[in-house]
Image (cartoon, rainbow, N blue to C red; front, top):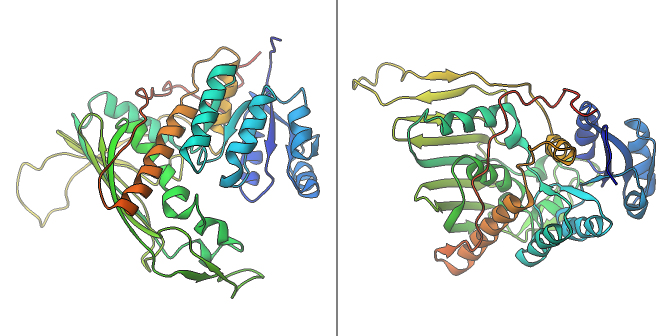
Length: 377
């Protein structure tokens, strides 16, 4: 059945991150959130009331709702594949929070299911669709730094156990700094530089047991299942190399180190956990050797309005109505997952690991892309 007008969205998962999604999706005229679902129906009802959504209930209620065209899957990582599969089988298009899954097999089955049945499949992070990252992507494609050669990224800090009231899942299989924050940095690298062919990584743990530091359960201990400090080297299909530090074991808090080096300049970006708002700087090779002077740089003005989480689902919605802006695809997300699992294997095997998957170069969004415009009749 052909539809017109705003695309109906059903959100499954009414946890902490749902506030951002529900607020942002409510600001995009081309989509309408019509249902909120959760295994805890009372929590779903509370979020629906808070954000003015007309319907709520369990997961099955959202999947059975004919007004829901796109399901936004905000469940925990371990449930992503199960919930997304159920949504695809119900004939819904799916936007999933990251990661797409926590193992290759289930995630690949999900991509294949979408391909065989026809629904669109997309996955966070959609921060790469924000004006900062899209401006940088178009600049790189236009040759602003010449031929890209390498990249450096880093985030580090004390970890979510210092602020999250229930952080155990962030230290379980399918999480840790690699799977929790890594998708932001690796997805941005794939968008800006290209697919990754090989990885080598070293991972360690500061402790086997950590303690919740805030909230009503402060003082509760829990096990650490994954490396909490990871040094990753990625080699891209076209020969570029990236060095990435991912750690929740350092007293120094430093997020958002992201630099792309080319033959004619270095592009310094912001934190890939954000959509933009940071100063984009291009540093050129120095013509004189004088360390007493600050190194000069050029500023790249961001193009487009600052968006937020949920813009990837909006891109899917516009594509459903005949547009062509769905670029944060399931295929890209699967490649990033494959890179992360390969990094885990490299830590265990202490050797380079080939990344079996690949993905086509990711196109940039149009310079006039505006998530706040009403484009659907």
